[in-house]
Amino acid sequence: MSLFAALTVSASGMAAQRTRAALLVENIANSETTRTPEGGPYRRKDAVFTTQQVGSAFGTELDAQMGGMQLSGVSVAGISVDTRDPEKRYMPGHPDADSNGYVSMPRVNPAEDMVDLVSADRSYQANVAAMSAVKDMIMKSIDLLK
Amino acid sequence: MIDRLTDNLEQYMNLVSFRQKLVASNIANADTPGYKTQDLDFQASFRSAMDGGSPEAVSVPGLSTKNDGNNVDLDREARLLAENAMRFNVAATLMKSSISRIKEAINGGKS
Amino acid sequence: MTAPISNITPITLPQVQPLSSSAGQPGEFQKVLTGTINDLESMNNNASDSVQKFLSGENEELHTTILATQKAELAFELGLQVRNKVVDAYQEIMKMQM
Image 1 (cartoon, rainbow over the protein chains, first blue to last red):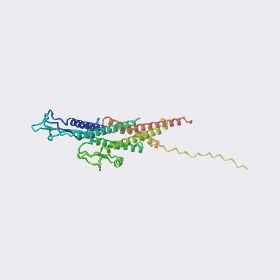
Image 2 (cartoon, helix red, strand yellow; image 1 turned 180 degrees about the vertical axis):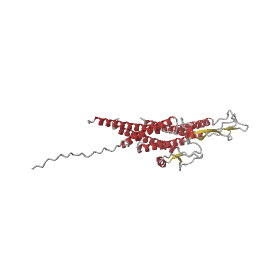
Image 3 (tube, rainbow over the protein chains, first blue to last red; image 1 turned 30 degrees about the vertical axis):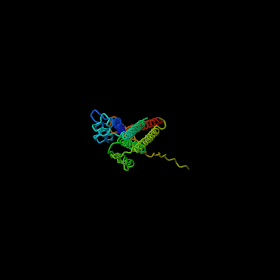
């Protein structure tokens, strides 16, 4: 795989971190949501990352068949939805309270997710830096022609 | 096969590129559960490249593993990213001046 | 009394042996020339292959392709200069008064 494949790898990293950040933002925004279209309180979502081999943007299937080196990118294999029972909080005046005065609240810790968001941002920046460094190397190679 | 210097430089550039690709992979998979950092044993690969071997990725000892099995250290990868970029730069610059020196020698001082 | 002048014996020139003909054997220079041309050809092929692989997206690094083309260019320049020098030398010799 040429250096161009490394660009694809970094791009996959950026995409994955974006998805992760989007889900975290959704969790934070819905940390107090008690009513959802599916019924019941909001359930937190997490991105499941998995390694995915990438070929170059110009690469062919032939190259992979020939055992050419595959680079490890990343992709979001799926979104896992929290299946735990929701938290119950005692709020008797709440419109969604049940007969005992308990409201089912989402199991979202906004502080935790905000820290995660910072981490996602940092990883995203790292991928951007990687893409920039690789691009510079490619440009430097082209410079050899002059 | 112009001279040994340009050959060595070309091998060096190949290896630095390979290493940089591994760094990009490590960064992309910094949050992937179970992913292990990959790197290149530079000395060994350089020696084997002289005999026509191709570089191989190896695992890195001494990294701490997180709960999900991932052992990528973003600081380490960021450092390597900068280092590889600089090394590639140096090699390319040396290569460029080497080539223009040879060209000048061929043309006997008039280009 | 002076001795009578005897016949002048003709001076016999030593026979000059002609150099054994080396027309059928490749000289050192020809070997060098053929070698250079072959190298040039192989460098050119190398460069073309490399460019081909790069363009079709195969596993070819950009700097490898660029270096291959640079090497081919250098080989060509060298060949060109050698050829010029040979032609110059030939013309020098032709100019010599016989």
